[in-house]
Length: 233
Image 1 (cartoon, rainbow, N blue to C red):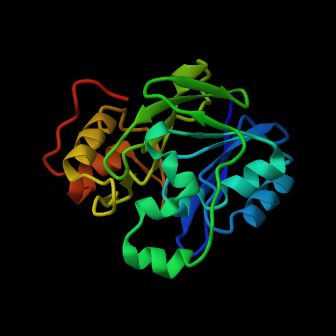
Image 2: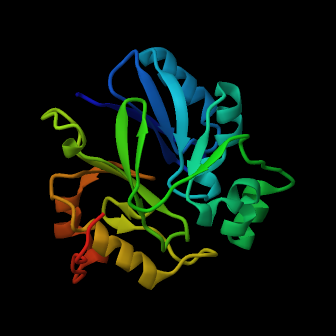
């Protein structure tokens, strides 16, 4: 099964929003619909003739879930998030610095989608004909998760072995831990688990370009000296 992954950086935060489907013309999932993401999502849905059936959120920060309620409401689909970050759906200020609250939120109000489902560490969520393995990866936020699409899920040699990392791991960097709920030692433990994945695993981060686990293991200065954990994602 060849997997279609497409996306774009949304809004002023340039948070990557992804659409994932088995192929054009199929059902899809939307990952991290950020600020002003609706138009970009609609363009990709039309271009690839996709039908969205769920939104997956890597964490609760506003730059990744800004548009979740309107997107879910317009499509009549559920949103999936880890319980430790759920409160930020209705109150994103809980995950922001004071300056960011004043600059970006102002008098804005947010609300949960009508249908919110919980993500659990280690579970496999089957959506749009695809399996996503959930990895709880706290440190950037308490409820940060990764979504793994592994070739072993269906046995097809053309499957994409990839990890959607949100703000856990970027090309050449890692997620910040100075915001409310962040913790540096915790994110290092989450990264150590991530480094147990194969070098060829494609990393699709919450910001910036794609990379691989192998490249980050070799060149990412924030991972220097970090040893893979005994148990992987």
